[in-house]
Structures are given as C-alpha cells and as structure tokens.
Image (cartoon, rainbow, N blue to C red; front, side):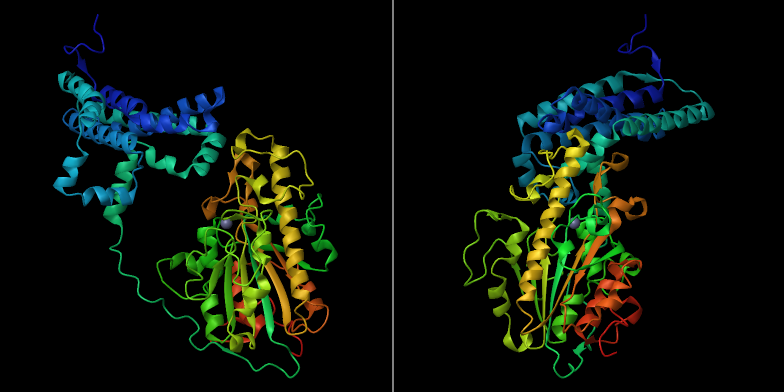
Length: 552
Ligand SMILES: [Zn+2]
C-alpha cells in the first residue's frame, strides 16, 4: 500500500505545497504558540480552540501562496526556501524573544560576519535540522508527477481558493477573539512565521529612502493677534483632548445612564454630531492639530509641517502641552510641554490617590495648574494662554483603571483586559465609570477656570481623539481602518464651557449650533478664531465660532 512516506510513488506538486504549508503553519510557529499559551486569553477551552483556528488560518494563507508555486520544477526550491527562513525565524524568536519586523530585518541585513558567527550556535543547528532539514529530505526524496500545464494550472487555482476559503472561514469563526487578542498584544503579529520575515523584508525594500527630517514646513508664518477691544481680558483656553470617549455614552447627548452628573449642572454646550479625523491616537492627534483637515491630511502624511500650537505660539500666546498619556505624537515638540506625573515646580507632590508611579488618573492634570500657568513667560501670558490637557480618558482595554475607587457608580465592573471574556454589561459599566470620572475632571477644570475670570477671559473646549467599540458587531477597542470604522469609533463628544459674562463668544449663538455636523477639521480654524489670531491660512467656514463673536 503506497504511503505518504514512500519515496517511490509520484506525488502531485500541490500535495507537497499543502504539506509544507501545514508544517510551517503548525510546527514552525512554536514561538507564537508559546507566546499565546502564556496569555490569560488562552487559559480556557475556548482559548485552545482559538489557537487551533489560528494555526488553521496561517496554514490556509501559506497553502494559498504555495499553491501558486505548485509546479513540478518550482515547488521544491520555493518550499525549501520557506522552510529554511521559517526555521531560522523560529530559532531567533524562540531563543532571543525577539519579534521580526522591519527594524529587525534592517538589523539582520546590516549584521557583519563576526556578529553572525556570534549568533550561530548548536541550538540553531538543531532547530534548522528539525524544522527545515527533516521536511527538506522528504521533499527531495519525493518524485513529482507531471500533469500537463492546463490540468496543473486548474488544480493550483483550486488550491489557492481552498487555502483562502479555509483562512477566511476560520477567521470569521473566531473573529472576536482574534480582533481582541491582536489588539491587546500587538506584537503577536510579528511572530507569525515565516510571513513576518517576508512582510518586513517587503517593507524595507519598498520604504522610501528616509530623508533626514529638517525643520518642519512653516504654517501660518503671518500669524498675529488682532488688537483686543478695550476692556476685554486676555483669553485663557483650556483645550482638553479626551481619549477614547464616545459621544453616545455621554448623558449630555441623550445616553440613558447619568454619566455626566457634574457637567449637567454647569450649563455647558454639548455638540451632538462631531466626527474624529482618525480611529487611533496616532492618526487623530496630528490630524486634528493640522490646518489641513482629514482628507488633505490623509494625502500628505509624509509632509513634516507645523501645527496649531506653532501658529498660536508665533502669534505671541503662551502655550503649554500637559500630558497624562504616552506623549503628544510630535505635536508639542516646539512648545513648552510637561508630563502630568511630574509635579510642577513649587507645587505640592502628587497625592498617592492620583498617581501610582508614572501612571496617573486625569485629576493629576489639574494638580499644580496655578504653578504651571505662572511659570509661562509673563509677556506672553499678558496676551493670552492656551493650556492643552491630554487625558488618559477611557483608554482601554483596562477601563476599570480609569476611574478612582470612590467614583464608580456602575457596578459590577469588568476587571480584566481580556474584553471578550467579560460580561458585556460589566464591560459597559467599567467604560461608563471612566466617562463619569472624565465628567468629574472636566467639572473641576471649569471650577479652576472660574477662579481665573478676574485676569482672563476663560473658555474650556473638550473633545475626544476618537471613539471606541465595546463589543458591537464583535468589535472591541478602536483603530479600524477609517473606511470600515463603525460610528462608535468616530463619533466623538465635544463640550464647550463659556463664563456667564464677559466672554468674547455669544453663548446663545453657539447653542444654536449644537446639532450642526462638525469634525476635527474645524479645530485649527476655530481655535484661531476664538483667540483672535489672524493668519492668511485661516478659513472662516471651518471656524465653528464664526458669527458668534461678541461685537461682530
Ligand atoms: Zn486615542
């Protein structure tokens, strides 16, 4: 009886392609399985099923690719190349705990002979023999049948389609687990062997030769402050950049739960129809501070340009970026900036209730704000001040960490970052508690601004960077490509507070605009308009304060 391991029978090149794919998709990915097994997500039968499906998806994709090469004279060298690269990749990932991305490939390509010798080891030899040598021997001993061009082409196309169908079917079956696991553990994607190596190689090969980044292109070179009318105090804008807050969970916007108990008492204006520029912090932040707007910004990402903060500073205003997150994504490079977990000089130390090491609740942004304000240059302060507070907000997946123990009205809370294992209601509870805390911080910020009315004309403008999926359609977190992003990820809250008297802006006029469709595209021009900064780049049709300035 002819067996799979007999070297006498002639095999189809397509069978060889699929066997190679199976070997690569399962055994050669042991560093991925090891990493997955170490996660809390896989500690259940469902987790193990997910891993099996994951192996099936990788095998399907590889089988599809290898089916293209399933020709009598082609399949053996192609399969051997993939086996050797996969075995080498598995060795380095498994031994050194590295992942293979474009930076790693650049490192490998720049490695010299001495470094290479240092990396070679007996262990590497064993891995290469087991993962590449054994199947390569089988490959070489197998004789291949010739089917004729037409029949082989037909079979190979069926092989390509079957591989894709397998991958897509399994992906659909485990989509919730896959989406959430890959979002929570982004580096896993760089363990998918050997696709990671070839993907990174492609990235390196096609990447434009990166030119040294000189100074940014100047934006609003002619920015200057309009003369302030007699009696009008200098403006003080608190621009609060929220994180992962979605408009539909604000009771100010009609949400059934009381998530805005404090702002509801403060006569703020909540804009109902505001859209973000991106679905992630890295995409939204640079875009919302740019004068370009989403469409134009998307087409000119490589342009190194100044932003709103540069324009404000050039006009003579005092600007400070205060961060309680992972940084400002380059926006605050040329203006004064500080991290919230490092107390302002002259301010009391941050209380333990607010900060656990560098990880702080957003209340830390307001701690010592007087001292931070006073530290800004006096001549600029006299013209006006812009303080940007970049919140931690509702940053997931650990929503329960975004509110203090004494401000968690919605119980019980989901207390894990493995969102798909959470009870859906508990997940929403944890998220809504983070919104209640954001509401509290904004109310405190307004209380601070109210103390400043003797010297300034204060305004608070809060808007989030993007929204969030909380399990709707099996989607969690954010970062979906914009074209496919659900509304939950792009519909953001925007809240405006103006003092009762003395504001440069007519409140009633702004109230009439709360249902108007607005977006991050309006931020640059609206802030220029609000603060009386004149520049030729300013567009009145993107200024939501236009027509609402007192005395206009
Ligand atoms: Zn964000």
